[in-house]
Length: 299
Image (spheres, helix red, strand yellow):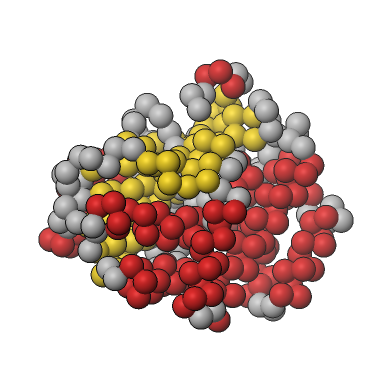
């Protein structure tokens, strides 16, 4: 989250960067409505998903939905800080109107819970809702939010505040810098819940990874499947910590489930809901593999 991005990733215009610049210049609801109107009028079509290699068959409605998700993801942190505690809780809970949560397995193993997730359009609401569920099931007393970059994603503060005041747990935001793993090992207990965002695109990494790339599996329409290389070291780190390593999967647009980590089964996410989709537009095909048969992907 809020990770440093390589200069090469910004050589061409990207829709998410255009959106962020626009909100930085005028952070208002009017700006959101104007951007959505521009998307619907076709003004930004060259920056949207059907301009990416192999995605020309994506329905226009899904392309527009992806663009609006990007706009709302950038607009969300402008709104959340103004909400009361009750309003913020209701905002997070509203995600369950469109997403079925709570299908969880693999919670019986001992050790800290290490949960990987992807940057989904509703990821922060999902994290809080699963935090509430997991703190009850496992009697967790501390939630650790791992983040990249020089500062935490602002919405992490909202999640942390809700967790502290409503779930009665101790939140901790831990930047992935310096001796962060040593710090994590010093505080981790069987009652610790750790959330890690495990899908930074390898294309956006400022330095090549020394590990074999992990992947995220994206899907859209009926027959579009794509795997993208991502930078994630969670498998090694969770094992070193002795943690129970789990993964949040989004196998269907309206369903999220929690399951044990499986190195042969990348986390799934709807393409139009994946926050990093703009990096695929105009991207070099290295690090991106198109899966031609839907049967190759396990649900």
